[in-house]
Length: 284
Ligand code: NAD
Image (cartoon, rainbow, N blue to C red; front, side, top):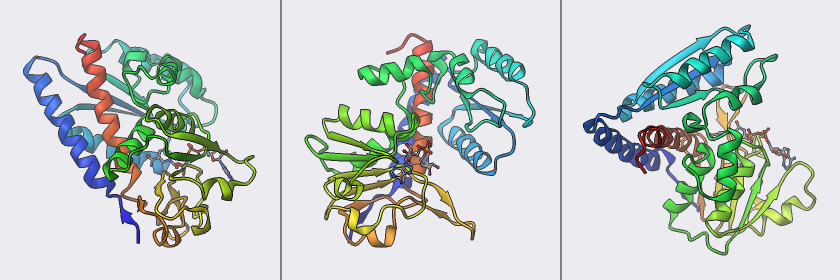
């Protein structure tokens, strides 16, 4: 049976580290602040925003929340971002995605000052991630790397397979695995022989958005299996992209859903907010 990777425990360690850094910065007169913008009333987004606020409180980070109605106009959203870009109390700005129809996500992301872009979605930050010289880690992929490291498994030379090629998870995930010296394959909806490719993975990261998509026969015995997927089932329960029951009999290590990758995403966001405050204060 696989060892279950405890995302809550690993994220608590990261948040403690962040809280210590925040306290140290405060002693030197530097405050860390995160602004979260939520447009519309998507229930999942509301939960994420609440969790982010709680994490800020736990780390001693000032948090400001902006809840806008679903019919908010692009000019209004841009004006708010401009205001936050100029606000010295705010080190990091996050606009919760997806945005309601009619709002241009790319333009919104592009408007956030790169040194306040704690989600690392801005073109400037994506480019830096590609080069491997970055101030902000992409939150979910960075959290996954921490979870893999927590197993003690060395990524160097290992076959790592990422299922999913989104800008938010799949692509930056592949890049971070590459920076950690893994041999990386990215799979997607057009991939042929998906089963065979996955069954050869020492590290398998699923970021698809389809419940129980990864079955036991797609897993190499002893592999590290990371489930990024968050799918809400009809009974209200959360379910990952990996069939946990089948996978835990074969994998060496596996993340649960919930309690795996989710808490790590938020912990990395806290770390990025501190990094933003340091960047703006000219501290390396
Ligand atoms: P997305 O819809 O943008 O991308 C899904 C990817 O899956 C696509 O690249 C697509 O090519 C691939 N895919 C779809 N069907 C496939 C198939 N049959 N075979 C192989 N690949 C297939 O989604 P996303 O934003 O990358 O998110 C993926 C999942 O991760 C979602 O469930 C999302 O809720 C979750 N998520 C979790 C966190 C977290 O903090 N845990 C953060 C972000 C996203």
